[in-house]
View 1 (cartoon, rainbow, N blue to C red):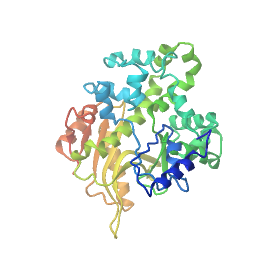
View 2: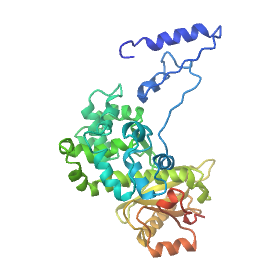
View 3: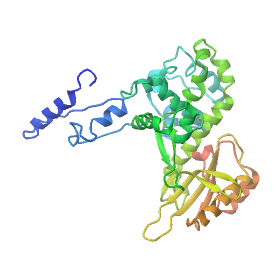
View 4: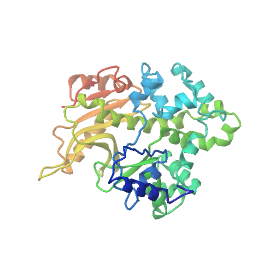
Length: 377
């Protein structure tokens, strides 16, 4: 299409010519650049209205990816692996020739000889994913936007401030990255008009958070040293946010059977506590919008922690969030707290779950190896 921009119009002409006399021919158009493929059928594009099927082939979900990589029996390893390479099948077979970490103890050596090695095809893959998008020309600007999100600046204003631009100046890059399915804009389920951005491709997030700041050292073969100094950054900027997204995926999919009131929008949001001058981040929430004079209702409030043992303090935080939402007019009568942790739960929180009304979900529960403790009424 770059060489021959008239190609879609030529295809349209041939399709229209054969509509009156069926030939039995079928035409399959495929490509990896999401913005290009989506543009084929958008607005006034020549092929709009002429497609019989539009199929977006998405990466594996976290459970299917664990099965594909053969690590489903080790949830701790599966979670780390998915936080780095996501669910793209080619990364195991075509890129790494079935080089899979044997255990959690082998993960560090594996990541140093694969993703962080300049001799590995995965080393520059994150850069290639960005470069292949046709609408991206100033790659430095787009990398800066992605780096801002990877550093925890998830709002439009936060991204603009991080890269030293005005909010209006980054509208186009944000739209292009959304169209390319590299960024997702997720609405705040408690605040209308508020949203946050999240990097959808784990390998790009890992690159921006861990690899790009130390690129020169990695190219010189210092993978072991760089990775040894990246534990805190990996936990805070890669594994933690990814774990929150996986927990929301769990609530949407396999976890619905554990929740008796999970019909509604699944997302995250911020509850402002004006009295305490703080904001309570709710990582996983199920909210049903109000309609017909009925108030919006909250079915679940959840908090997700990657490296923190969750305890009574977390239960109090969600209890306070529930009180604030009730005061704002939300129906929270059937709202229950849920806690997701990769590090475990305190005895006091487990006792509360055993009494009922509290849901505990760890890595074994996320990967279907155990039944969640407690329930949400």
